[in-house]
Length: 342
Image 1: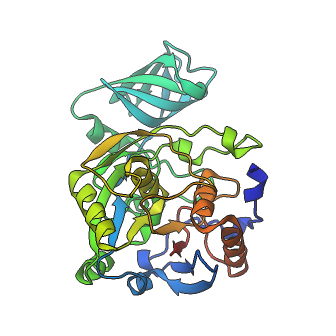
Image 2 (image 1 turned 90 degrees about the vertical axis):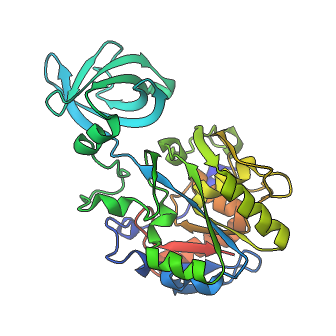
Image 3 (image 1 turned 60 degrees about the vertical axis):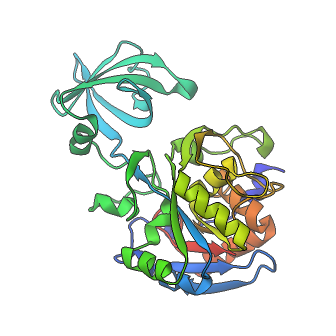
């Protein structure tokens, strides 16, 4: 199967630049993956498509304000560092600019010296391994100095950083938001819980590799970047009980889906808590073990994410749904509208 099989025309004006005032006011396209039928709803109507005995699995990772703007020492030239992965001991794998200037041994300063760093080595794909020095708690320093790492297709300034976090985010570590969860409000989650749907969480720290373009002609030649994820004991129990009782596992976002599919047994259950690195690449031909229903946003053409949803619903159903979304002026990508695939 070729990367070009997942191309579609997307007018640039449909790429959402800012979040809606109300999180759950976004539109919701409902796609039946068996017959391909489509319904146009709004996200606050999601409970109509859930049933008592289902479980809703969400990714509780929290986005770090991981973009740091600073100066190179001693000359003072500008530099930019984007934190990707915590390697321990204040060593982070980062994207860094200007790459030609930030060779091993380069010294950096952020916030007039509140945070300093040394480039220690070159990493995979031209990334840098950077060791930071500071006083106090690193995440508190980062919260003061860092900016939200919004995707490059979002050009508008974000006035409220919390709008690039889900309302249930609690474990810092992501370089990008698990955006399917941005539509939920505490009130909507309460309604869903009150109707007998179990709420549970996994943690996958989203790396930029998830959004890396597929440059290979044949999609099977593409290598996924590894991301760390955890299925805690309570979630493992709830998902297993749901599957055995005949309920549906509803994954919120491709990150929750990939986490569940990485560690579930062939029956879609769990024999206890699980965790570790995953580089699972889901594309058409994959047989889903655990996830029965998927909530997701609208994704980039030729991306691994549109390949995943095509594996779940069928490529023709997805491309037809995306053509209809374009015709109906749905909002695309991180701050865009949502799709429920059932």
